Amino acid sequence: MHVSTILFSLMAVAVSAKPVKYTIPSSLKAASASNCTLPGKYIVSNFTQYMNSEDGTKNTTSFHYEDPDTGISTNCSSDASSTPTGAAGNRWPCENPNVEFIYQTTNIAGLTVVEVACPGSKPQFEASDLVDLSVDCEDIDSATTCTQMGGPVNGEFDSLEPTPQSPPPSSRRRRAH
Ligand SMILES: *[C@@H]1O[C@H](CO)[C@@H](O)[C@H](O)[C@H]1NC(C)=O
Ligand SMILES: *[C@@H]1O[C@H](CO)[C@@H](O)[C@H](O)[C@H]1NC(C)=O
Ligand SMILES: *[C@@H]1O[C@H](CO)[C@@H](O)[C@H](O)[C@H]1NC(C)=O
Ligand SMILES: *[C@@H]1O[C@H](CO)[C@@H](O)[C@H](O)[C@H]1NC(C)=O
Image (cartoon, rainbow, N blue to C red; front, side, top):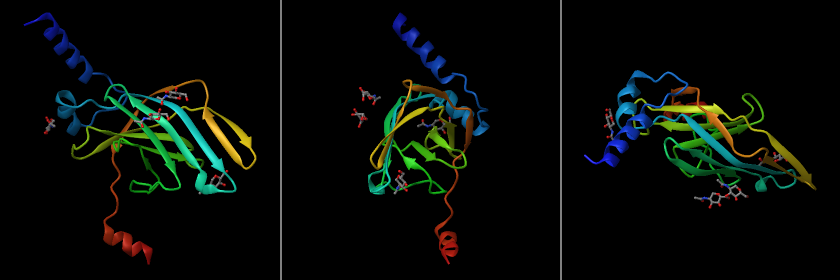
């Protein structure tokens, strides 16, 4: 065996055994030990929120999301043309659909990022975290633009929960009455 091959296998083992801050559910232990990397740390950069009080269709929220462990690097944004997802209809998908975000000013206020853990595993789990973000806002006429201060934020997931399931279509119809 070549030295480089040995080094590579050692590295592969080290990556999948990376410690995480949450308890790994037993159903994910086998998968995460062999063929998938659990979300651990993430980086949020270039967060920008544009709000227009006269023309709300111009409002946008965007940022860049990166998970160096799972190799995800994706842009996230929502605007008037975006369709929310998730069981509660309060999430916005990133370009990589395994990443979603929630941005709100009430309840758990701020930016929450959600990353699917071991996509395709059953039951499906997801890691989530409230991003420790500080923004600087500037008002120009009827518009407010808030941008991330202090460079990229390094975060670490400390929660892993089952992905909330959408109610079946029949119960949705009942609720509408
Ligand atoms: C990953 O591992 C799990 C458990 O060992 C297995 O059920 C699953 O089929 C594997 N997935 C792939 C893509 O190899
Ligand atoms: C963040 O924005 C800066 C300047 O606007 C740009 O140079 C950089 O590539 C962006 N980073 C990402 C990860 O999109
Ligand atoms: C756009 O942002 C403004 C705040 O400046 C807010 O009053 C308005 O409700 C927002 N509109 C939409 C469609 O989100
Ligand atoms: C993500 O956004 C950045 C900054 O707006 C841009 O430079 C980059 O091309 C985008 N990446 C993709 C894959 O769209």
